[in-house]
Image (cartoon, rainbow, N blue to C red; front, side):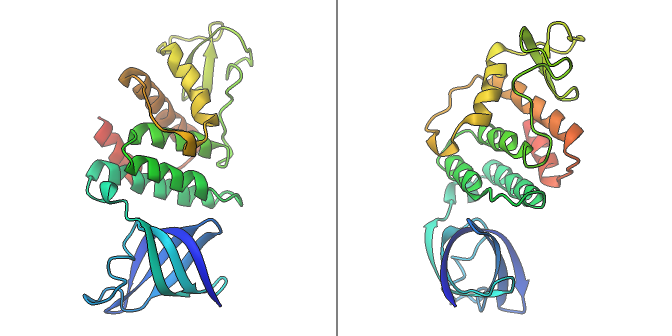
Length: 240
């Protein structure tokens, strides 16, 4: 049947000399689509089937099989991302991470994912947007953060820092010489978790707080998720 689906292309695979298969991430999940002749110079699909093109795709839909592309109405080419190696690196990592998270859950994460990409393309800080999505994904990976109490004793008062290896907030009683973070860092971790990504219009966070959160999440992901993504290693080198 003919079907229109909204989505973003997250993967391209060459097929023969002139065609390719794209993987489209949609509100319904992942759909693989044959794009006949899309690599030809004169094909209308050549420019509209590139990775990270966001649009409405008209397809001959085959459930759990390879669908076929009919036409594309582009919503956003994400040109700002595609021409900036740093932004592109963040989006590549978030795409790799999202694919891994989708293997662990039946929940569809499309709205948070596409909203994050839109915000990055619009000029919001890519590291902050990346960290927000990373925090939201932890629950789906089965290692969600405890944002209400000390990771060691469960106490809810006198929280003074965070530690990725120890699993979250650390209170004064359980403190073991971990670096003390800014109070704003502790507050923003909770905000990152609960914020509606679509509602974010501006970000004013100091570089120190931003880096403390990023370092914490890097450590937490390394310790508890079991994920190894080359795209994340590349980001760490950029941060360094």
